[in-house]
Image 1 (cartoon, one colour):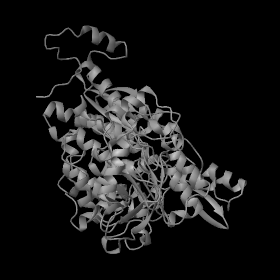
Image 2 (cartoon, one colour; image 1 turned 120 degrees about the horizontal axis):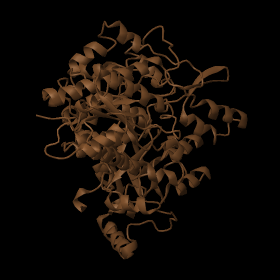
Image 3 (cartoon, rainbow, N blue to C red; image 1 turned 180 degrees about the vertical axis):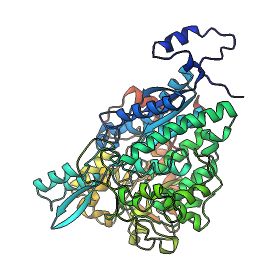
Image 4 (cartoon, rainbow, N blue to C red; image 1 turned 180 degrees about the horizontal axis):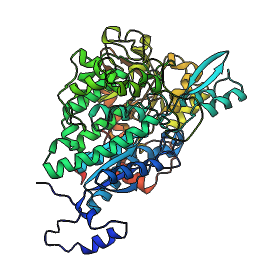
Length: 614
């Protein structure tokens, strides 16, 4: 039978010293009979998605204490991909995921905590905590800080919703005056919370909800809304309940590996494909699967991508809809219910509520439920005022968006496409696969052939784009930006955004062993595996080489003879210790990043550390 690790059972060991130290934190005799629940908080003043989480930790801790647990809070780091974008800071983003996972493991195991509630929000923080949850396999609940409201501005007598991408674009597009550009910059990210489109942070928080490790509404309920506070309180109560259920009643069904099983990961991936989420989610789900020893690979994702319809286009794939609109349409539960109608989901999986997905949808899908509080929660609306204060408003939409023909969430009958918003491509240049967000690709570009223009850093490519060196029909190749080659697998939001600003995104492709922000659109193909630094064919591409991309047939190939490949390999290997490294790139790589690169696998393995090297 599981027992609390909270120092009540000594098993012949003298724990008086540990108890003495716990007492110095405020614990008493009664507390040693209760579960110690770690409140894992990612509060930081560096990141808008986390700026409001300091008080949240206190709210959660207070509720845990009231409900019969002993809350003990600690913090993790949090890197903001938007702030780290476009400079050397981005090298640290993906590696921070492993650092977060390790730090959570260290704190939990060093202090023998019994359970944890993870307060997260942004790109690598939620995945990092998920890796830790799968690794530790103790009762765990996730609760995000919520998305920010979209910015609102009047341009040409028309009210327009804005997000981070608009701020980046306005800084380089000639059509905007400096005054208008500054105004857009000031209003594009108006509140606390994760960026208002279906970028990586919101995509991951939606996936956690789909997996079942968070409460319904977690992925979409605005950070500024009072209902988000209610979600934190409910989550705090729930973690105490499932912790006691595990330790006192031997209920193993509440553990992360029982909830986030292969069926749940499949469901989450299906939903991600349907809603056109960030391609980064693939990277993180593959990593989560490895931590949980789950047989889930790129091949599974490829199989799913071919049969899942695209039911949503949310910013940056659409200017019409943002996270607040997605929530109004029923959010994660709304998409899952449409997928359930066409029998794509395993609805027998259970979540932290102890409910099957089938029963959860009956309660939380806005088209199925008669629960007034549920319907009220999905009417939570933005207020439209700048603030960094969480839970500061109680605005409601008058009506929910239940239009499944032309609304934010569509039925399968009215899908944007029969294929979903993501696709896995294979070919000689990506033998282990690569990823494209098809929701952001023009249909005219689904089949694309062009000549390679090769760059060995993101910075070099950006310079070429801004100086108009890219021509129609070019395939921009950015290599040595993978997990090992970067190191750190930088996001390519700036190159794709600048292509958009010059209008070339409609006429060019961009391929890379790096990755893309959820804010990316256009024919942008990332995660090419094996990466250049792992002796992938990408390392041998030269300017002028022909590359053919065929999304309908899921292929991407460098048009080159085997004899030519053999010649180029010999020339590359002749470089000896410098083989499969950038030729002219000048980049300072710290010891910490070198250590990450030493163990990093390619993207098809989730960019996790290679355990075979241990």
